[in-house]
Image (cartoon, rainbow, N blue to C red; front, side):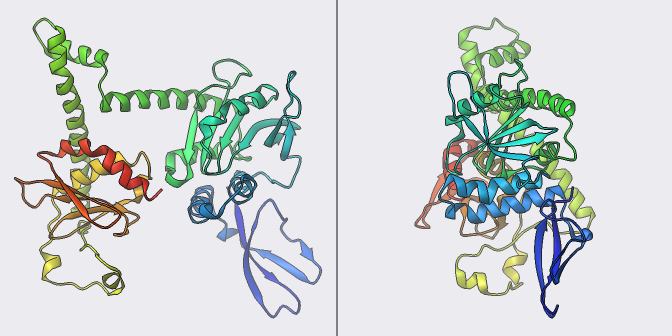
Length: 409
């Protein structure tokens, strides 16, 4: 998938080269304008994944300066449509403000309609990037009914929700079969979005994937809910499999906590196993496990790293890394998991966002095995420390961890 074509523009007497980028849909190769000429280097063109990730970075850097819905469309949503391979300036491919009138209501217009062979295949309804999309899905439903499009997209330029009519034909489903957030997009999601590219668009293939994605998403929500708070049905099912006596309400009450702790313990076991495999692979490759001394102020940040005896005394333990992965699994609800990083020191194991010590999430004080603690840094840089007995206790501080991570959205 070719998205943006890097090129050089030569103008006037050709005494100065200017490096710029054109989108592939804007221009044709070998076009000459007056005395200037445009030369394209196809080998430098970005693939689809790179283009999406570049847009994600653009969203993060520009969103605070975007004040209106129209600006959101211009800065975030039109580039997204272009990355899919559609020319936003070609009315045969993209129709802005397309009529979606219904019998009882006139003047209804969808922001963008993606066209193929003269008919809409996808409707895109846009909102300002700060808007809660849950307030606007009914609006897209009306437009969907009034058109022949098979897919509807509701977006604020950051979150994109993809809908279809999987339950009843021409009636948009209540639940999207795919939802992405550009600020924490995963590689598997990029591959699903790629199916909507102009050159890849296959209706039957997308609908087949949509069915699977929809039910997989619903099952994952149920699993997450069960892990957070096991339902009476799950507790009863598991209790009957392990308890030999009569299962009374009192027994179920006792097993509710047992099941909850067992589920969390299983997560830790799985992470420990994967961590062990990763450590062995790292050691086999001869690379050290990531450790670094914490940076406490801007002066230290500017100074070059010094290798001394203190650094050699830092020992990142498996337990600290397990704690890190628990924290990472909790806060990934609000920020992308790859943004959650750590640095170890002699005093504590720091977990923060974006490899930036000025964006703390928490600190793990595990050096004393009989006095484990977790610390939270407030906005005044003061640390509040809580005692924990075991790794599972980290889950008890989910709210504090989520609140800390939300500061960096």
